[in-house]
Amino acid sequence: PGFRFEPASAPIDWMSVSRAPLASISRRGDARALSSYLPLVVLGSPRVGSAVVGSGSGREGTSQSSSSSSSSAGLNAAAQVAHPAFLKAFDIGQLSAQYLLHTQALMERQVDLMSCDLAGVEGLGRRADRDLKGKENKAQQLRREGRQMDKLIKTYHRMLRRHNPSLARRVVWHGDGGVSL
Image (cartoon, rainbow, N blue to C red; front, top):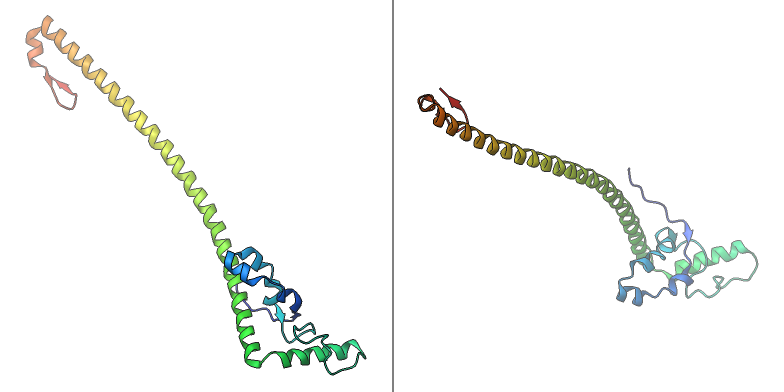
């Protein structure tokens, strides 16, 4: 499947972000805890919303007249709090995170497919092992039968030498188990 970046359009809950125990997450390598913050920042836009850390109520320099003016004041506060270069770095981080999440999903699918393939190969291996064991058992049985036939032929040859030595001298024993006159 093709990949495309999702536009960052949701407001970021800066209070939740500010409460994130990053030192603890980093020290423990707690990817699960970190992943709980991903939705806040991967698709969140620092340019949308008014809950910016350090901006107070989000209505700096304005009266409490309407929600639209508080939103635009919050947007202005976000623009004042964050340097344009920081916003660009944040955007690059978001795009990187989106791409990493995409590649993680692809890799998980590949692992699932490979697990299915592996299970199939393991099944073939077990079947081949059973077939090989059956063939080894058959070969062992045939060797046993061959040894029994060799004993039987030698016994008949001894009997023939005892009862008809002239005929026994004309019988030729071959290494492959064959007998000829």
